[in-house]
Length: 339
Length: 262
Image (cartoon, rainbow over all chains, first blue to last red; front, side):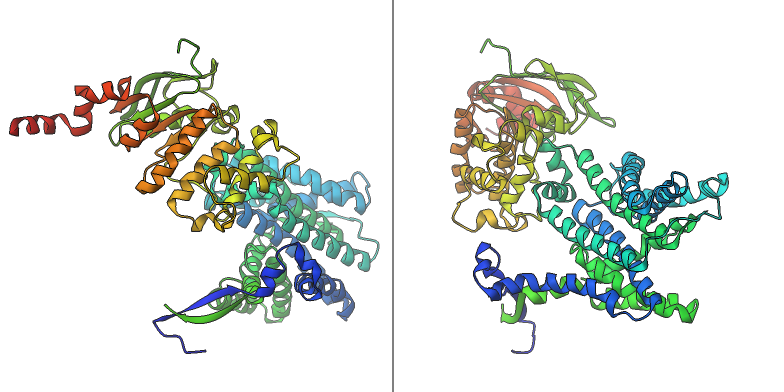
């Protein structure tokens, strides 16, 4: 290894094992098989083990909330990196899902195992319907409109004093016990993570990625851009509503703080830290960011400063994100070569 | 040629602000023919394509495809009927490999309806069907080229990819917007037989071109546009002999000056 000079550049080459394990022939050797399955197994087993190894109820709760944020972050990453819609609507989705679950639980008397899927589907449909007029917008304009909805709905609830007004809806059923609560959310999160990764590589996922790359070409292919955008928004908002519904059952309360901008901003920060476009990166980002923000709670308002410092450090030193960096190191080796 | 035209454009106009990009342009395209559209820069050739395929809203006028009015339809509906186009500035999905670029059009309602390419349809994996189409269009199957990211492909292949996207839809009409421009002579030479084969397969083509010599090899009827107006249409030889066309191409003043100096 020589020192880098102006005449040299870094070359990245795929590891032999990556190429060997690209196709079905990976099944033929344990080495290739474990190269493929080990990272996934570590993730799955790790996620399932965390509640067991965390000692205190308090930190177990923090972990559950991290998973809720992770759902939102995956939904943000999916929309932003695979469909090209930068959505700040996390709070909108959480609020809609949360209030729907709360109403279904308190007014209709449905148990949590019914309210959660109900809030997911109905909430997803409702959010899609409300965002439908904004779908032709792109980039920052879509972001602004999707940020407008949670602010708007929170003010409507406050001003009209409907849905419990500023007090919120109280007396919502919780999950049977905290183990069910934790493992339900972890399993849902893992299912959605692997489901989303599968989706973006399926044929319909390629169409969605095409919408991001080049919507004119999609039109020229005889495919309706608006239809596939709304399909994607439905998937993403259903994820958000699901997390909102889980959240109100955890807190046993639903209020306008469900529309708080935290739900829009933290997923984005987590995506930046974890690595956009990897889907697993945002999860990792949430598992780092949310506990850190809890740790810093002792510092009072100073925690914003620390929080910002961590973010800035990440953006400067690892702007690609942890997972992108990690995947590169895992799949490729680097060497210096002469021009 | 007395049959009903497959595509009938009647009196389309388009103005961008105060500029009249198209002024009352009408023409017919008959099934199975290759119509060439030529004209100097800014004469409205691409706007004609955009108006036919619905990418730009016409100010006035109508377009009929097989007798049906498609003037007010959105672009994806028009492509769904079989009127497809290529883009002058290539629009592949840069983040996808070349063959995955074709999975997208193969996923469209039209491709599903028409049974994909050569009846592959639901039985055929879209990836293999995509590679089949790429091979037809001149990507070497056994090379790395069909598997490379579209972002790394050179212009020649991207132009072919544009055509392949149309072919994936089993089109009735392909409108090629300057498919030869930016290509080397040898690339064009290999492209011409491709165009001829498409015609033999029964696809109607409209070709917008600046490369007149190559265009005249494949087409037998051309239309000339200038300042958004149709100058004339007819056989290439008669058209190029026309004084107005010469003036449009070389500038009337220049022609006069050349004549004076002679």
